[in-house]
Amino acid sequence: MAEKAQSDEQRWRRRQRLDAVFGDDLPDTTGDERGDGEGSGRGREWYERNRPPHHG
Image (tube, rainbow, N blue to C red; front, side, top):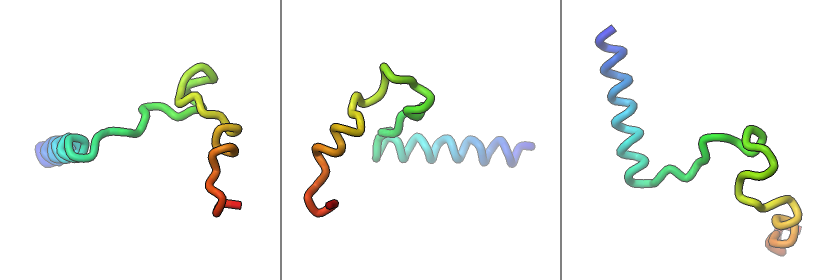
């Protein structure tokens, strides 16, 4: 049991170090879980208008 607790703590510390360096840009929930009023506010139309030309 002590080995599992130690490995959990090591994983937590590693995650903290990675977040400190790279940040935590991923949301805690997905768009499906949030609903219509939350999120980035960018719908499919925005992505269609801003699609680079090389993506045909």
